[in-house]
Image 1: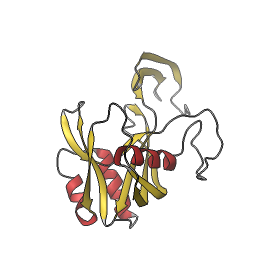
Image 2: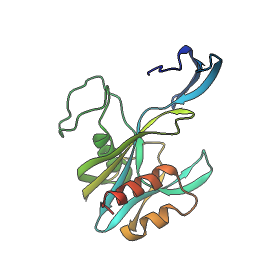
Image 3: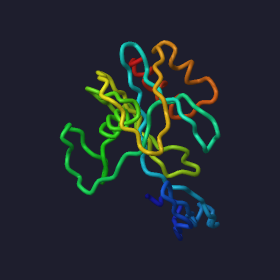
Image 4: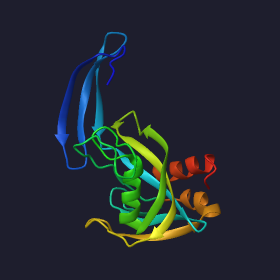
Amino acid sequence: MDDHDWPVIESRVEYETPWYTGGYDLVEQPDGTEKRYYWAELPPAVVVVAVTDGDVVFVDQYRPTVRETQLELPAGIVEAHTDGDAHADGTVPRENGESYESAAARELREETGYAADETTLLQRYDVATGILRHERGIVFADGLTEVGRELDESEFLSVERVPVDQALAVARTLPTNDATVEGLLLAKEDGLL
């Protein structure tokens, strides 16, 4: 991380969980005062906009954090690896991890049972930068073939297909989440929906 005109005097981890690490940076502000800026650090995640036969593929799942069931795009964590070599599918991994495209193909297959012929990174960005250290990639997937799901033991979800021309309206219906709306807006802006 660059310090710019805001030198970090101290960086402290206060807690670690299997999902994220939390702590603060004691920072010298431009006027010379010091302030603690709290953060939570999460691994990178991928969100998949997958289209087949004129439909967008969604998953319907209960989110205990917000205590609601949401219709959302398939998504998951970008897994870390120990090597930095290119993958067999030709995608280049992120530093010490799988590429967004590879993660998208894996998550799509696991959660929905669809294998994609092609995955394309639409956008990478930082999420909620006032509090999070968390990177997200939005990936478009097409050329889908049904191959069967491989759900993780903690995944309880169903697969729903929504016509492309209705997908954004459905995604904007509460309850919803940022990743689903952002993914569809990016795909629409890029002429993919």
